[in-house]
Length: 214
Ligand SMILES: Cc1ncc(COP(=O)(O)OP(=O)(O)O)c(N)n1
Ligand SMILES: Cc1nc(C(=O)O)sc1CCOP(=O)(O)O
Ligand SMILES: [Mg+2]
Image (tube, rainbow, N blue to C red; front, top):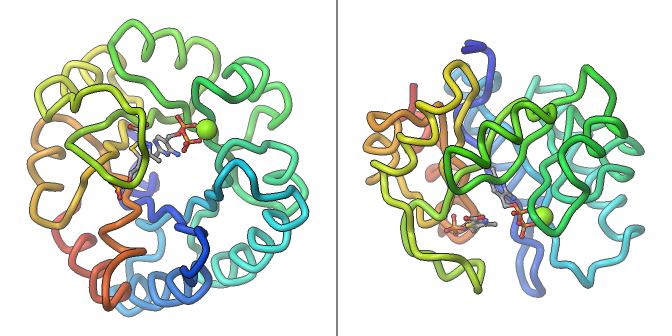
């Protein structure tokens, strides 16, 4: 597995009333303080009704904070915006471009994540060109409605075993208290929204997660 693959993916919460750029700034600063900027990725995620223009402006500001620090920036769903802002890559799921099409848009060097929930889907996503897999929901979450029942660590481990060497990023209800269990089960890292974006101190929350991850 690529040792440089970020083990902590902090996903922005850009819903009304949130402050995604303040959270990103704090997360990057916390990683820098720990000498761990290569272990952090910021995924720019907005609600579906947010315009491309608004996502572009937010993502450009995120890249401006990540690039100088050596933090990976990924854009959720919208490949054209990822390319337009010069992000390292993108993440796609069942409602987005199919993985093979996303890989075609992104090009061979881009980091492309795909959401999977079982071993067969994992093998198919990797064969189609995914660089890493987002696997969840690991545990119950209130951040995103309409998800299937939680997989739990064991079933996330089964997905990891299906695609040896491909980083598995566990997502859904992940906190600093349960992240290590997911890594023990086979995840290379975790992705979080609420644990950082919803924290009173997003920088401290980022540091706590980095300290329990490989
Ligand atoms: C790391 C990671 N894993 C899964 C997801 C979910 O992506 P997707 O299925 O496309 O759903 P939305 O995030 O678009 O609602 C993710 N974003 N990141
Ligand atoms: C965006 C997303 N996708 C999921 C999936 O399982 O596909 S779970 C999720 C939300 C994760 O938020 P939190 O860290 O606050 O639980
Ligand atoms: Mg999506």
